Length: 397
Ligand code: PMP
Image (cartoon, rainbow, N blue to C red; front, side, top):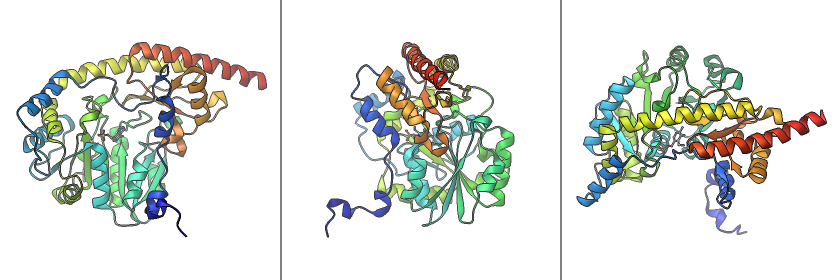
């Protein structure tokens, strides 16, 4: 019997949940007065000199495909940048691949590495795409929860305990979306030893690396025994405020980059040329703009963290990224209910922690990639709802 067009859809796609964030923001888009701290992208427009490079490239008639791996000029700049800022050396010719955002880099990495049924370990709460991109590559996601008591830092012992036969890939993200957690050198060394012992390949998503506010950012690929089992993925969306350009990259051993290149070549062909031209300019001359934006983020972070804590919603200070991840447990509400009430009663949009995995229950993600004025407005409104909820909690106690 026909079940409508849905019967044509592959089972593993039918089973895939829709992103919780999308549904939530479909509601927000209907509310013009709402203040949104929900988005995962900079509120800054791409710095002018980078936009200008794209415009100039268009004026010069740069409208063609590029080399599948990306413009060699861009790969050279990436190689220099990754060496100077991350301490990792990759040959531009065959160890760097330009992709359509970190999103595509992760997707083709999974498709290039996983046989059906291979397992991928990753820490949760995490970026919403991790589990789906594993499932779409016919892999099995093995999420390892992290906890507020540890500031959502990954515990290498818990990671090792979660290992099971069939685990092939370890996916890491420091600083972490949504928690702002980072990993110390010592923790990364323990994780690296575990990866060597279990013969795992590590995909290290370092998209928020430049937005590390405290301590040094260490790339796991620099640690002993790790270079040839690490795929370093990074991009321009966050630090350079270039989400719409859709440019990211992967660096790794040439055999793995070559395998990913095949998937990329037959699906995407190449990243857009104008975006690649803009990315060259970003790496050559973008550092001062990145530093300025980072200064703003830091000021906003301190403000938003203070407002959550003053509202009685415990919030630690994230050491990287542009997200706070406060606890709303004191209100007695679940994350989703808290977010719905905040939106309905005070017109502020934030994201339920559960959108990032079950261990996000009791938390919400509020991003500070938002103007200071809007943060003040949001802080006042969140404070009002928290006061009401805390008062009714006290009354019913
Ligand atoms: N990884 C993480 C951890 C992210 O937060 C995001 C974007 N929110 C991405 C990857 C995707 O970034 P891109 O725009 O480069 O595809």
